[in-house]
Amino acid sequence: MNLSEKLGLKRPLAVFDIESTGLNPRTDRIVELSIVRLETDGSRNVKTWLVNPEMPIPHEATEIHGITDREVAGRPPFIFIVDEVDSFLADCDLGGYNVLHFDIPILEEEFSRCGRDLGVDGRHVIDAQKIFHKKEPRDLSAAVRFFCGRDHAGAHGAEADAIATLDVLEGQFAHYDDLPSSIEEVEREFNDIDPDFVDRAGRFKWQDGEVVVNFGKKKGEKLRDLAENDRSFLKWIMKGDFPIDVRAVAENALEGKFPVRR
Image (cartoon, rainbow, N blue to C red):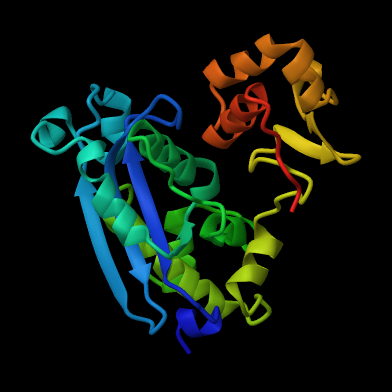
């Protein structure tokens, strides 16, 4: 039984990996993106893009992924490939290694710069790192050795990492016979997202039927009260180093639009 059968996939699972100019999803840019689509019949489709980040690639980043300014100089900026990427991700659930904390946020930012919405809401997300760290706390190369019985050649290349991550997912489901049997259950067990969180990072949360701030000196204060009495705080969030979904909550509140609990 292959992974698509074990998860009972109702739509493709797009496992992706990003190499970038740095680790800050808000300010850094994609230099390489690779997506491996696991189709519902178990087949795979792979697409990889080298991207001009329209900014210098720091030496420290090049030392990790090996991509230089010269290599991306003639490549298109992300805005010229966003339609192709969006089409390839259409109707897919998402997967990756540390995808919740890095790859999804940075891809969301790139989409936003193009005036687009990646549309994570409504997709299931599974993160091989979450499963691995709960079962065998190590990194991707160790995961490949443990579950696939080989060394991870091409580490920190987007395509090699994306393919290796999908191989690790398949190895995990072959190795652990007590893992959930659907993508929905995997997401619930391993993503550790508090149901009271309004955004994925938990900067805002539900409390007694109201959205409140869940960090810093304003922790516990109601979003509605801030929108009326302390708009500067919400404007600070919009301009600050926060994930795109956190900034959206603040921006909508300033416009008098508040989250509705589903």
